[in-house]
Image 1 (cartoon, rainbow, N blue to C red):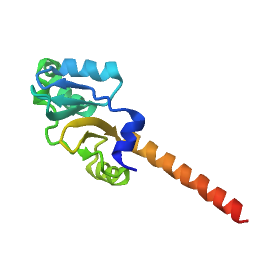
Image 2 (image 1 turned 180 degrees about the horizontal axis):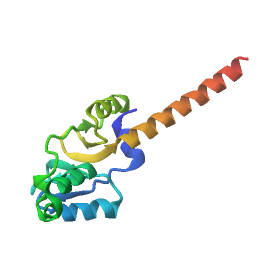
Image 3 (image 1 turned 135 degrees about the vertical axis):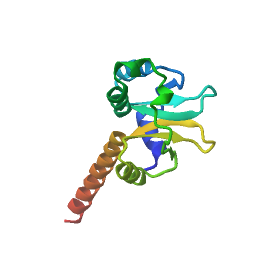
Length: 145
């Protein structure tokens, strides 16, 4: 299954903040939306980085309460692995597992941000595919007997 099919099922909503936002604003956005990562966009709306709950914990551990008043640009992950809508879920799962990250921004063919995929989205899709395949195999075996 391609990433575009996962986005069709889960939606293409992207929650993000500007790179000028403070860490406190980012923490509020994460909590308000019940999500684990924010897309960080520059003034032109382009992908500048991502900021995860892990980044938040590291920032507070590093700088204490002072971190909350600093710019998210200081703490965000700038080296972002992205995927394309045409990528296969199986391949993306491997990339996420090997890279030890749980969220990947999705870009279209024009390199525009069009969604966010989590490892949970990919695993849920793979489980559904496996269950469907098992159902068809059971039907096939039952018909052959």
